[in-house]
Amino acid sequence: MKYRDLSIQTQREAPNNARTEGFSFLARAGYLTRENTPTQLGEVALNHLQDLSNDTVFLSNLSLPTIGNEDEIFFPIASGPVEVAHCPNCKYTERLEFARFVKTPLQKENELPLEKVLTPDCHTIEALANFLDVPKEKTAKALMYTRVADHKFVFVVVRGDMQLSEAKLKQHVGEVRPATAEGIERSGAAAGYASPIGLKEAFIVVDDLIPQSQNLVAGANETGYHLKNTNYGRDYSAEIVEDFIQAKAGDTCINCGSSLSVLSAIRLATRKNHDFENILLALAQTHHDSKGLTLSHPAAPFDVYLMQIPGKELDTRAKAEELYNRLQIENIPVLFDDRDERAGVKFNDADLLGFPIRITVGEKGLKEGMVELKPRTEKENQLVPVDNIVEMIRNLLK
Ligand SMILES: [Zn+2]
Image (cartoon, rainbow, N blue to C red; front, side, top):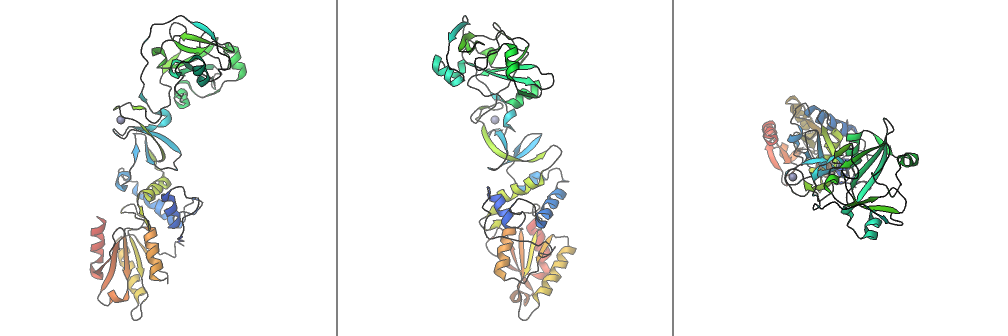
């Protein structure tokens, strides 16, 4: 294709809304508008990626530092909307809300008798732990929901030092929404002072650490009071005992025992689909230098950026056009910069666009039957015989 056919618009400056270098260079090189919409060139690049994706190992051929599991492939990037837990050691990767990790139970204790204590203004685990001078892990945190399907009152218990993963809850219980004041009252629970002990018509679910934790402080279902020494099994039981906890950075990997990281990411692929816009962003984020993109074969939409420098004696444009036609016949994807711009402008654009090879047709070289060839990631260019150009390109793209 030709530069002017694609109406390519490059920019000197990075857009001020750029949150990542990848987006910044895609916008500057004219693949995306500043509003993050693909341009004509962007569409060509996306269609090219889509064509490549017929090959099942296509993603692994793009030299991207991806992470993932059987269901989803992610690319870590600061602007990414997905949070994933990732083990740098064994590469275990899971969406944070579903990530599993090793939980360490507290030391086993003998069960002590229940004891009701006055705990004024202790509406939070923090306040309660401070007031009673117990560590947060010795408290039971209550969360109350209504199941959407049958309006059942769902009472969740997790250890006070841990966060519930609503995604894991929904996986086991179905869709839920926060419980209403009526629902809480009907069950006999008291907001802020709730516990699973003595509830009516409640669907109780507990995290799997709860049956292993003795003598926890929990609400007394009476405003201003808590119970010391509540014990699962003796004082209450549950319909479901499962892992309901949201992992966090530093938790222990379920596979290898290393420390989990939490990363922001974009999703590149599921089992069935690819997200080509995200793949293009990942490519730009991974493959660029200070001058622009440095895409490699086969990721680049074109392998060759062909340009000519106007001559005084020879018609360099006609020669470039000839070469353009020849590369097309040879099935080498080429973008011909057919503009009457200064060489410097074209060189800058070639660097921004980031195709693997730049070929320049100039008068001086042509007189000796040569053109200039420069791989994007190398500093120097070389003069090569026009007659050998196809072979040279093929070798460089291997
Ligand atoms: Zn691991």
